[in-house]
Amino acid sequence: MEGGPPTPVDRKVITLKVLVDKAKNRVIFAEADYEFVDILLSFLTLPIGTVVRLLDSDSTSIGSLTTMYKSVSSLESRRLRTNYCQEMLLNPRNASETECSKLKINVYPLEPAKLYRCELRRVREKLVSCSIGWDRWFSTFKDRECPRCKYRMSLLAKVEDLEDDKAIEGGDGVFVKDGISRFMITDDLQVMEASTGACISLLQKLGINDGNEVEESHFVFDTQEVIRLLKFALLSKSALTEAILDVHCSSKKESVKFQPKRTPQPDKNASASNTNNMTLKLWVSKSEKKVLYAEAGVDVVDFLFSTLTYPLGSIIRLLGKKSGFGCVDNLYKSAEDLINGGYLKSEGCTKMLVCPKLAPFHSVDNQLLQIEEVSYPQYVFDSNQNLWVVAVAKTELSSPTTEESEERRFSAVVMDPKSPTGEVDSGKGYMKGPATYMILNDLSVAPLSPIKSVALVNQMNVPLSDVVERVVTIGHNEALNLLNASLISKTVLSDVFN
Ligand SMILES: [Zn+2]
Image (cartoon, rainbow, N blue to C red; front, side, top):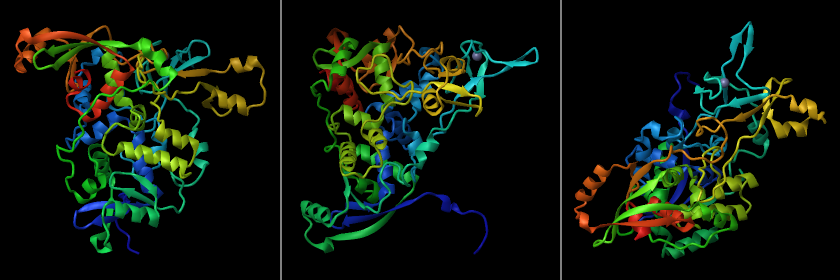
C-alpha cells in the first residue's frame, strides 16, 4: 500500500447503468439502487428558491422565478420587516435538511440550524442574562440583537439532539429502504422496481424490437452531474437523455404553454381561507389585450415571494400533479407509487416527500395556499444534563413531578426571525407595509415609482390613451395559477389574467 496525500477519491460519486437507444441517441432507462433513488426523491424536499439559487450559477432560469428571486436580492433591507427576511427568502431552510444531509450526494448541504441566546453579563460578580423570570428566548440567527436587552444573541444554546434517536431506525437508506431492490428510472423520471416485464413493456412502447438497437453504458454522477439532472428534471421531458447524453431534446416548440386552470377547492380549510383574498391592480393595453404591469400591496408581494420557500413536492401537490413542470409531476407520482409498494422507510419519510412542510417560521400571514409549517418545540432546561430539552418529551420521560417544580423550570421559546419584536406572531409576512409595488409580467418586483411606470409604458410602445386599469381579486384559484405560471412562463400576469 502506498501512502501519500489524499487524492480526490473522497469525491462522492454514484454510478448509474443506462440503456441507450443507439439510433435515436436517447436514454431508455437507467438502473439504480436505493442510494440514487434517494437522491432523486430528495429533489421534492428542496425549496424552489434553493433550486433557483443552485441553477442560477450556470445562468439557467426557471420560468419567472429567477427574475423574482433577483428582485428579492436587490430589495433594500429597510423594505423588509427584519434583517433576516431577505436571507430566509433567498436561502430558505429545508424542513428535511437533516435527512438530506445523509444522502450520498446532497446537492445543497446546509449548516445544521443552531439556536443562540443572549450574552451573559457580569453584574456584581454574578453572571446574569436578560431573561424575565423563567422565560428565555432563542434566536435561529447568530448575533441577532436581543429585542429585550439589545445585547447580541451569540451564546450557542446546548439543545438536546433529537436526531440521535431517529438515526437508530432502519439502515442506510434516507427515504427508501436499503434493501436489495433495484429500480428502473425512465427518461422522464418515472421510478419503478426493476423487472423484466417493466423493461420489455417499456421497449415495446418505444417501438424497439431488436435487442441490437440498444446499448448498455455506465455513467458516473458527482454533485455537479446531480445538479445538472435536477436542472433537466425541471426543464425537460427527457431528463436523463439531456443530462447524460448531452442531447438537446427540449425545443421551443415542445415547451409547455401555460393554460390557466379552474381547480376545485381541495378542502374545507382552503375555502375558509377565502377571506384572505387579495386585490391586484392591473394596467392593461386595451388594443393588445395584454397586461403591462400590476400594482400591489405587501400582501400580494409577500405571497409571491414566499413561494420561493415552498418545497418542490408541496408545489406539485398543490397543483394536483398537473404542473407541466419538466418531469417533476412524474417524480412525485413515483414517490406515491413507491410508498404504495412499501419501498419507503417510514410514514415520516413519506410525508417529507409527498406532503413536505415549510421550514419553521417560513409561512406568511395570508396563506392563500395552505402549506403546513414545521415548528420548534418548547424547550425546558434540564439542570441534571445541563441541556435544553423538549418540554413534552421530558414530561413523558420523567417520573411524575409536582406541578410546582415543573413550573419552576427555565423554559425557552424560539423567536420568529421575521418579527422585529421577536414575538412569535405566527405567520406574519416578510415585507414591511404599507407599501405599493410594481410587478412586471416576468414577476420582477420593485417599489412603485410613477415616473418609472410611465417610462415602462413608453418602452413597450403603448400609447398612454390605450392604457386602462383593471382590478382583480386573487383567491385560491388565481393563487394556484400564479404559482403554476411562475414555474413555466415568463409572462405570468398576462397568462393568468387575460
Ligand atoms: Zn436579551
